[in-house]
Image (tube, rainbow, N blue to C red; front, side):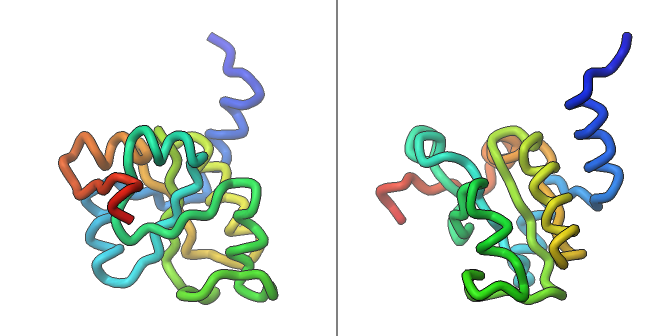
Length: 130
């Protein structure tokens, strides 16, 4: 079977990343890694969120996580480990690859995304708890 253009793009992006599973992501977060939730608000409202994760919707990601940018969020630098996640780990792979390109070599993504985190029984909070 022939792969599509987006499948080739995704495969190439993932080849650049040291992707992490939910258990490893939880350990890295406990050690100071920055978890970044790029899911739309509707997904966070419906499914919940990972406690402590920073919300940076995909449309703003490069501006908010450029280690040299004036619009960057606090709590990270060019040497930080940054774990991006979406719903299922597809958009986050492309996003993490783009973060490499703007100067975050420690960026990666969560294999399986938020839903894998939740399936593993790791902590999830409702948006109301935030």
